[in-house]
Image 1 (spheres, rainbow, N blue to C red):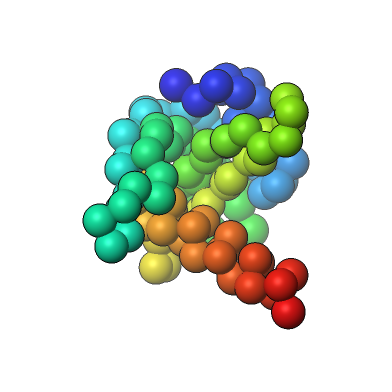
Image 2: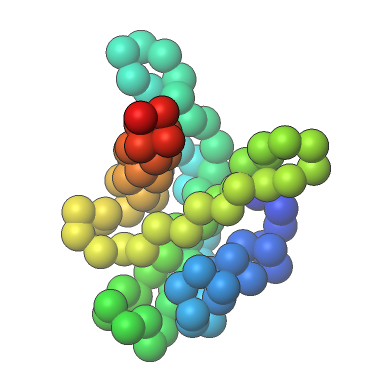
Length: 104
C-alpha cells in the first residue's frame, strides 16, 4: 500500500481531478529502462464517476520528496493510458519532460 495511505490518495484525486473515487485494487508495477529500474511500487486503482473527460478509472500513488513531503501522481484511464503500467510510464515521461523544460 502507498505510504501516504488511501485517504491521502483519495484527497489527491478529489483535489487534482475534481471528483470522488472508490478504491478498487493495488497493482504491483516494476518499470525498467535499458535494464535499470526506474520505478518499482504499487499503483492504486480507483473507480471514478462524473469526470468531465469521461474517465471511469484513475491510477494514483505517491513518493517521498524533500523531508517529509510527498509528490502525488494521479493519472486518468484515457488513451493511451490503458492500465497501471501505462499510467506509470505516462508519469515518468511527464516528469522527464518537466525536467527538460526547467533545465532550458
